[in-house]
Amino acid sequence: MSENKRTFHYADERPDGTRLPMNPKQKWSIFIVALVVVVVISILVTVKIKGKNSTSETMAEGGETTSDVSESQPSATMPGVPVTNDYGQFVTDDNGNTVTESFPTETTEPTTADAPDPDTSVSGETDAPTDIGNADPTQTADTRENPETGRIIVDVDREDFNFIVVNRTREMPDGFVPTMKEVVGSGIYMDYRVAPHYEEMYYAAKQDGITLTPYSGYRSYERQKNNLNNRIATNQANGMSYDEAYAEATSVILPPGTSEHNLGLAMDVCNVYDSFANQPEYAWLMEHAHEYGFILRYTAEKQSITGIVPEPWHWRYVGVPYAQQIKESGLCLEEWLTAQGIAY
Ligand SMILES: [Zn+2]
Image (cartoon, rainbow, N blue to C red; front, side, top):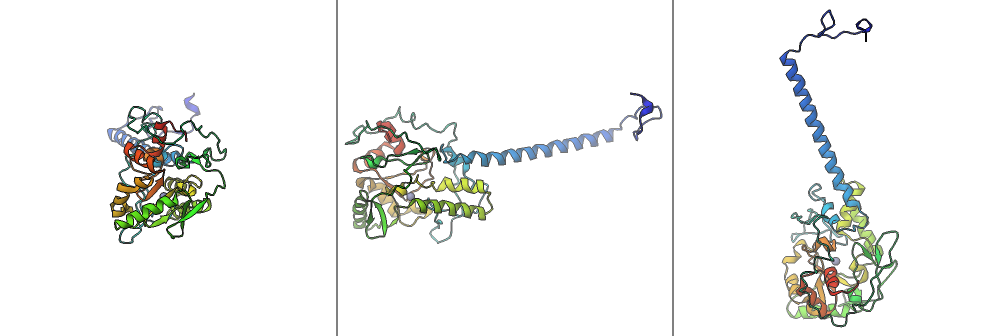
C-alpha cells in the first residue's frame, strides 16, 4: 500500500497524509446519526416480524388446532369488518345496525402451548356421569382420512348417530345428505330423527310464552361453501389479503362438511343477534333444552377445543339422557365422549 498510488485525499488530510483529529461536535453528530439508524431499523424489523406471525400461523389448513381460532382473530388489527354468524349472514344488534366487531374483545383464549389437551384434561376430574344408557363404548373409532383435507371422515351410519362429531378435524363423507324432516312447518329441515325432538321442545316452550323460531337447521354442503366464500369476499372487499380473509372466514364459518348443520343435527334458534344470550329464549333453552336432548354446543370456555366462537343460538341434539349428563358434567361434547370412553 504505497502512499503515492492514492488518487484521492481526505478533506481533513494533512499534507503528510495523516488525518486531522475529529472535533467533538463531529463525533456527536456521527453518534446521533448512528443511533437514529439503529432505532429505525429495529422498528422496521419488529413490525415485519409481527405482521408475518399474524398471518402465517393462521393458515394451517382446516384449523387443526383450535388455537388457530384465537390466533387468527384479526379483530384487533382489522376493525370494521361486519360480523356474520357461522353461515355467513350479517349479524345485527337490537337496533338493526350491522355489528362490525369481529369477535368478542376479551380474547383470553389459551395459545397452543397451554391449550388443554382434550384427552388428558378430563381424566382427573371425571365428574361426568358413568351411566351412558345404551351407548356402545366398544364402537371403534373412525380412521379413514380425506387425503385432500387431512380430516377424519366420520361414520355417518353409526347407530348412535347422536354422538357423531364433526369439527375442524372431522368431516362427513363427500356428498352425504341426511334423511330429513321439516320442523314445525317452518320450511327448515333437520335429520328426521332429530326434528320431532325439536318440535316437542318448540311446543313446550310455546306453553311458557317462548317462541323458539327455527332459524337455520340443515344446510347443504354447497350452501356452506358459498357462505364461506362470501365471507372471504367480504373480508377482501374490506381490505384484507386473501390469506387474511380466508383465515378470518374459517375462524367463524366451518369449512363445508365439517358443520353440524350439514348433518342436520343442530338448529340455530331465533334471529341471530349478538345479544341472544340476553334474551328470554336463551334463558329458557339453558333451563330446559336438555330435557329434549339438546345441548349448547359452542361456549367461550370450550372454544379452544371446539374451534368455534361462542354461539348461544346453536343447539345440538345428542339425545335425552345424554344432554342432561353432558350439561351436568360441564364438558363439551368432544371431552365428554372421551371421558366416557366412547369412540367418535
Ligand atoms: Zn349453528
